[in-house]
Image (cartoon, rainbow, N blue to C red; front, side):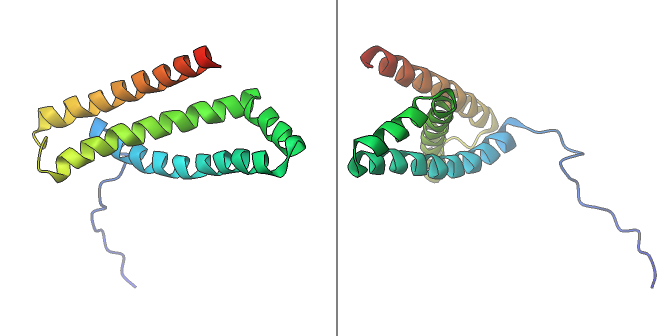
Length: 128
């Protein structure tokens, strides 16, 4: 058997991450995070119908530091996926493909995610 010295395809070790590739990977990851976070939401809602003891247990977990971190991460994923989904809708309409616009909209997605997440948590804390 002969060894062939074929060139290898470039990989992540060769190319440095760009905003566009990072946002694309994050969009997929946040989709999975939303699905997993929805299981926590379903658990919390189902415990409300299971009686006071089950709800107290679920509320205790959701209100714990780990539960709050998970809720915060879920809300970040939700708002990121929402903002980036709107960006993708614009692309589906054929808008925003110029490279400067792609980068501006990418940064707008990140800023929008931060603003919406903080706003939701601030309003939630004020009302709670």
